Image (cartoon, rainbow, N blue to C red; front, side):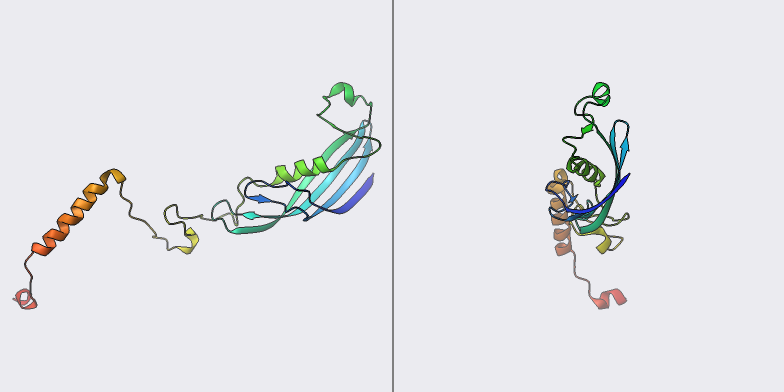
Length: 176
C-alpha cells in the first residue's frame, strides 16, 4: 500500500448550475493506492472549496466538499478485460494512473443539486423577491385575479362615489 497526498489545482468544469469548484482552486487528495490481484485500488478522500448561490435565497455560499473515492484501475490484459466492458473500468496505461477523470466524477457527483446557505433557509417572496427571513411573519401581498381586475376597479369607483355623495357629519351632530 502506498499513501498519496497531493494538493493540485482544480480543472475547469467542476460545477453545476448553482455551485461548483472554481478553476484553479486547490483540491486536496488524501489517497491510498493498494495493489490487488486485478490492478490498483485507489481509496481516500478529495476535499475542495465550494462557491455558489443558495438555491432558495440566492445568497453567496462558501463551503467545503469532502468526497470519498474508491476506484479500481485494472492492469493491462488482466481478467478484467474478459469480465467487463472497455469503458466500465479505468485502466493502467504505460504504468500510469490518470486520476483526473475519477476525481472529476467524484467531485461533480458530490455537489449538491440545490445548495442551501443553511437548512432552514426560507427563500424569497415569490411576489416581491425579498428574502422571507428579512420580512415580518405576516408579510402578504393583495393579489387580484386578472380576470376580476375590471370588477375590482368598478368596486373601487363605486365606493369612492358613495363617499363623495354621503352628507358630511359635523362633530356637533355626533354629540347629540
